[in-house]
Length: 526
Image (cartoon, rainbow, N blue to C red; front, side, top):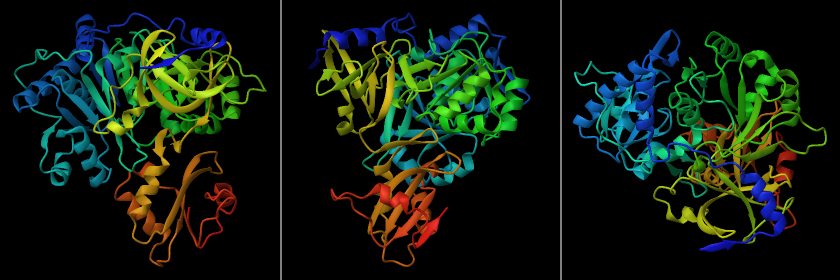
């Protein structure tokens, strides 16, 4: 076990960062247990709202029990992994609850993803079951999977299943981009979900809370949006549509009296630019996913006032959120928005060269606590990010985030960049190495370089530069090739064809020279 011994200054700063983070929560329970207890307490309270449909806790529980019993009779067993592909609707929430009631884990996925990628996900997670509202389409694509529809005739048995998953059992699996060219499966325990939504420091989550489920179900922000409400007796309002329109967002939050919203940084910036008052009635606006634009934050803070905006940060491996920073004021000389202090039952350490960093010293952010994933599925080499340490005499399992931060003397963390080529694009985590790997599988591509640049609207865009001698290897052909293996958010928005890639004096691809000449290549796709 490695040892991390702090200096006196480092010990003080880290103590301030992690002070008060340990709070009581149902750490010996499962999501199923806590949800069923909530149903018993408030059966007639409103659980889910979607368009004109209003579903109580009793109704949601009954529907989930019916589906769970049917799945169990067909052979679903505790520990199995179930792919869930259901449009945002009460049936989606029913499917998630039903899978957990069976003691299984859900793997949310988007049916538009390429078959090859989905097969990789299913094989990695050993997922042999699919629950969906579009059985015909998935049955043709995955004929060897056990397929179940979420909408079924009424079942006679509606009691809670006796299956009891434990706190350390897996509740769900999310997949993130992988630098080796393969997506990484991140299993999350029941305990991690409960740690996220109980005793929250970053938002009020109780029976008066109404959260908005806006994120794609495959994005881990959905964990907060759904379970933050349902495990605290609140209401989860489902955004009625696939693409977010600010006029519709404004209408929904007002009509349903939404109290709590999470927005990716890019969507937050668009809202500030186009309709900052769309969330004027919301109590808490959480935003994160990538580095914030300080001008947008200042404008929002001036409009909403203090203590309504909260910057949140967290990798999938730590169950959605790991740190938070309530916005009360912003100094004109602040170089970056802090990512703040750890949320409840989470600990943060800044590490460099085998020691805890002093205040102001840049190091890698490492996280600890019950929110940590047990490790990647089928990728033992990648588990080097999960390391057992002795931190100032206390045993801790740390997750190395790869994010560079410094710790202020008051215990507040400030983001300083990455130590690898992982980027965030519209809230999605993208390993540039995975995109480069996919480009390299095109027979006409001799060399490729992938990076990001900021577009005219302030949005970050993936950009690929390709060297080829093949006249048929056009930007459109390259993008079509990538779509066979990558989801749309990982396909570069811009592809440029080059005769060669410029090199720096150190022999590396000169990123700045490429971006300076953007738009002046042989062929370009906007």
